[in-house]
Image 1 (cartoon, rainbow, N blue to C red):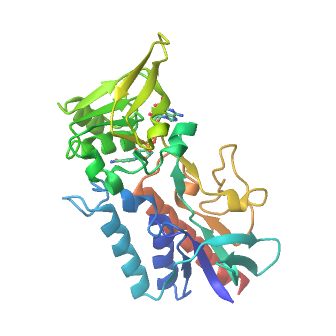
Image 2 (image 1 turned 135 degrees about the vertical axis):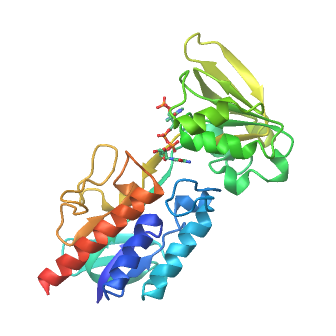
Image 3 (image 1 turned 120 degrees about the horizontal axis):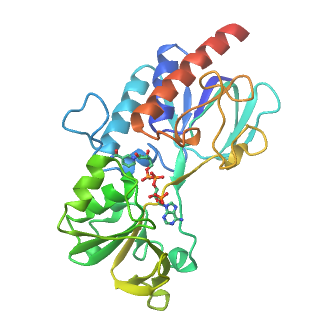
Length: 308
Ligand code: NAP
């Protein structure tokens, strides 16, 4: 039986692994389908303390993983299919294998929110994407106009990154002011390669019949006027939804599916802790996720010491 299993391998999960490893708990980390989590899709993390020049998101997560492994954390590329938290030890079914564990840290993160259009689903990977860092340099977007949807830091980051490759970047936002932090908003609004399109939503992505993105149909929410913007790519950056479906009905969550924690990282079930973007809809920073992972690990250590 495991002493502690950590589900998720982003900043929260790997920091929890580092701390529980240093507490000699020999943690087992189950990575999920996206090892390293969403941060691995970020090009440059400029606000993680200790890296004055910034650090590539993938590199940051890889370094935390190496640090955790140095103290004995085991990282397993595996996806959890089911959990049974009604008995002790808890049971986790991952890739067909049942793992029993005395304690559990949930650090499953969050996924990209979708617009919900049929054309969005039909054209995914054919010009519709959720990650400029992953796809922005593809030949199909080079020297072509592209569209970014959203008004937060992610949308700004995507738009700025895309100016390296695209001929012009339209940022389409449903309001007339960016939600992003001042520094990111300023960079976007002062870029000659980025054109903001305010008060507008995407109502359709063209052209499903051609099997590739040729433009977006947008509607001004104030005037109801519709128009088409020609583009080769649509980068959607409209926030996230927590990856908590596995725990529905068992672990207490809010109406949006974020896990509710109390007294730090504790959930409603003793011995089960949660950290990172699956809990936090407010800060969602690499450093806050790491901090929550640390807290979850310390509480796990205390819990295991208490139960002996
Ligand atoms: P976010 O701050 O929640 O912003 C989501 C944006 O998408 C908002 O502008 C929202 O519009 C818009 N939106 C949501 N649903 C929509 C829909 N159905 N249709 C059209 N637009 C929609 O999410 P985020 O940008 O991913 O950022 C998440 C967190 O990560 C934030 O705390 C952010 O600071 C952080 N982050 C930081 C950095 C950085 O510091 N470099 C980079 C990336 C992310 P409204 O504004 O009208 O609500």
